[in-house]
Image (cartoon, rainbow, N blue to C red):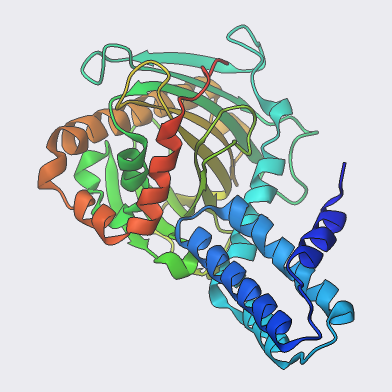
Length: 371
């Protein structure tokens, strides 16, 4: 097969034209400029993996032209510098790097092999008020000493979940996760704070979420601040054979960080534990069973600077089961059933490039997600 470097060379030669002639140089510059605009369009649609692949190809073209271009270089150099300094492309590089690191940290070796995998504590949730076919399987376990990351928190929890047949289209469900400032704390059980901010296409449509949960099940109040980033995957999933979908990652900032991923971190909530080293991936796909429904695969790792004995798995299972059911019921009751009265559709309409690209994943149903 052809290596990426060889393909970049072939691609560059394919549109290099006769750079020694004025017409050839002009045509080549127009093609390069069109490639830049195409990458910007991919960024606006949050097609992060496609955009990064195209940006790397373009940068390969510029590098090749440093030695092969024999005409007037000024316009090409100017365009190459524009690409290098472009704030949206900086955001693309940083977002893609964080996403590839997250996928690497949450490797397939950590997935449960099935319901009988004894490493994991498992709970199955069903609720006919959400949907007749709705199910949620949640798995959790502590990371082993060999799985813990160096310099990380004392306690590290691994979670995995499979949500099936939720009664909402992918694009609408994604909007619930992106438009963090519209979500009300009254919709979450035991929630003391639920705040959010949303960025535009210049930052690849990322969002900030800040939730403080005071569940009576846990011995301590949890303060959860995450940066939420999105990647539309119209062809294939970056986390296994899951078909077209929308990749969402929630990342917690390093301990005591004042800013992270382009966001200012809010001050710590008094008498609470802020979760650090949190990495959560959600992958939304159309339901294989019913139109207008979707499935969600989730995989996460979270660290807490408290002894493991304070958070037994039995306690955490109760908390997560209660938390997720309250979330799913709240979305069904307060958003799905009252969609037209809320502000989500206005946000979807105001961000057409992003939400239009999420519609592309509805073309093909996802494969069945089994643990």
